[in-house]
Length: 426
Image (tube, rainbow, N blue to C red; front, side):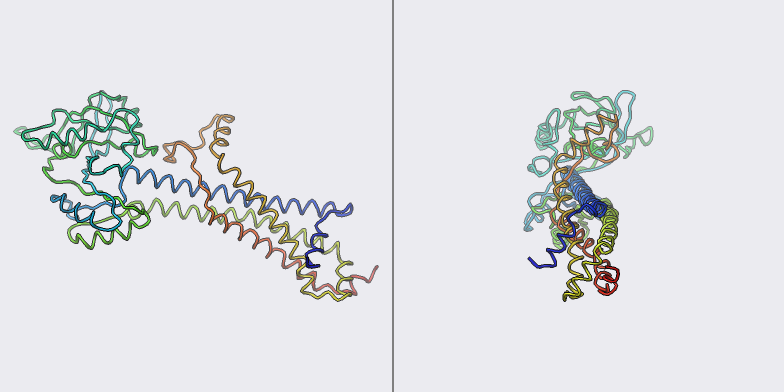
């Protein structure tokens, strides 16, 4: 062990005459530990929130969407799907129809987004089937077969509603509801909004309040009939093997299909949301670093007191041949030891708290009778968290570096002490 490190450790051990210095040392360690723990917990929550939100968005929608730039719909669906699925990295593609309608049931009326889907072609890529909590999606396949039969027709189409939408409108599985399309039809009486009756075949819950309260799903044939689209669809959903490669694959699809097709990947469709989350994560990191900076000021004051207390010892060491560099090492090692100890304690605390965050939040809600994270505000029904080891590593590096830098000025002042001044009154 280098003698500089040995002397640093000796200085940090409390003596009867140095109890205040020892208390300051423990306060500095606690401040660093608290800052590191808060950073790890908050960054884990922000990362978990972003991942959970992404998974829920991609569970209900697709990784990329192909539409017609002229907004006239896509006609040759099979050809487009064949061209898209030939691209490496694409694992599935299916048509969809989407439009806003007015849902009425009894005295309630709600504006909803109605999506026509093809669960057969989706082949399990969408999480819709997993999210069904009542009923099933079997009616979609039956309606598709009926529409393909010669002279076949759908007598009463089925619909799947979001849990919050059904609760708000007082709808249960098996109920009959009416939907009004914004497109009108011409009759001898003039333009009349198109209305159709649907049977509620099931209810889904995605865990995202915005989707659960505003989405409804029907079959593609029923949607084509309702919106008078004949053989057209609004667009084609695409799923890829690696969602991080969705932008690159989307560019390949765009180049292959050309005009008038327009391809958007999930990152472009939700750019504002994920950019805001990323910015918020950075801002929280910067704000919580201030806790460590406060602890760093404690380190500065502690080391200054140690320098004042050890003036005689510093003078003796310099008289015996200790260089300025050695004195700087002695006191900078003290700041490094305080920072390292606090960082380790903070990491242990952060990694211990993160897995039990939901239990802690639940306990606080029960004690104070509050709802910490309302689902209609935060899109979530529980607090997600995921430890990011790269972020944690950066937190550790920043913490130790800040503590080390804070110790340099007191160490430099100690190295400039004149041995004669230190021993004059001894």
